[in-house]
Image (cartoon, rainbow, N blue to C red; front, side, top):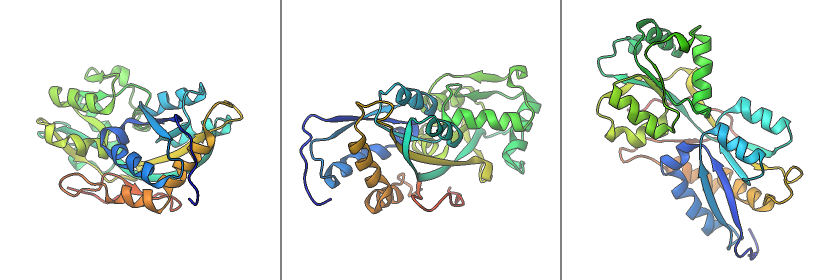
Length: 269
């Protein structure tokens, strides 16, 4: 950035899935963006919701930038003309947690689908976000691939909440749950009754992308400023910040991959 441009009072809205916010990543990225950008008076207002809700906010023209993690829903959003400049920015993965006694035996499962079948076969308690988020959408796909109708599961519980509150509910009920790894690690010390039981299946890979809202659909959106933030978060400074962002044990919560494509997930302890 070669010149400083004044945009005093300009606020742009970033509609983000909840995990970058809950994990603390955005509280690191955004202040560093302010240092980096030439648009010195621009401020970012974060609306952290599930990916489905974030996309709907953007469809209404109530957001300028999206940071989301549901590739199929994003494809539809872009095809409808609402999103521009979509780029992969980082990835982590989903993990399956449950009571340490693991009554369904999913720790020995050979795939995420097998793990879901085992939970259904035992009719063990399972807490779902149920909020049409990217995480919920992936969970629904896995249940479908497992041939399970969750309406027939007596132990199936719909929380209708974000990842943090849903994890707390599962912990209280000693139930199984699927979570993104970043939110799980950020909350791990507060979970007393559930532990990580299954991980590593490529079907659990979790890709995040960033894009601007198309001003042709909503002329009032701040497209220039949105593109500026995208340049930052997918560029060397933003990517290094993502790579260096860890929990207190040194576990990487998100892996930067702008321009690289999805990379194999490394397990952490």
